[in-house]
Length: 157
Image 1: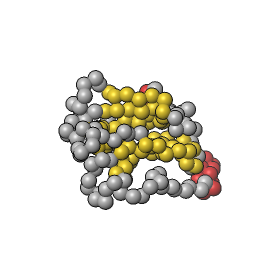
Image 2: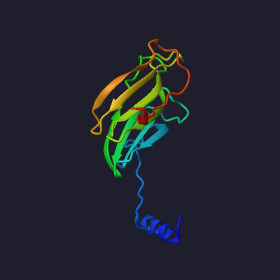
Image 3: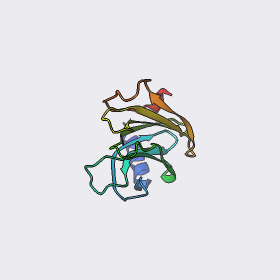
Image 4: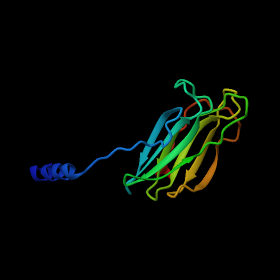
């Protein structure tokens, strides 16, 4: 890179203000396992495990999956994507991942154990730039036989 190009890049970076924001709007309980995706349109999607009913950080029972989208640093929405579990069991939704296409559609996958038996499913949700649910489903047809983490890649959409 030439000296002129280096100086231009340095000037552009010096003029840019970087601000940071907390993704989750509720601090009650325990928030873990975040994942992040960005696109060329300046949007950022953040997904995490949120255990709002627990005071112990090591306890991921009853954890839910939340997604928040930012457009050019401004929060657009926050939405809960998971659906709880069987009453009286140690159900959980864990290890979320997110992909984001250039239109702002977020694809979120995670591992869930809705009946607390220790075997996981891999559900997914596709969410629009406004927070509307566009699609949902589950990877694989067999209930509760996954044990590895899920991952999303919106660039393959």
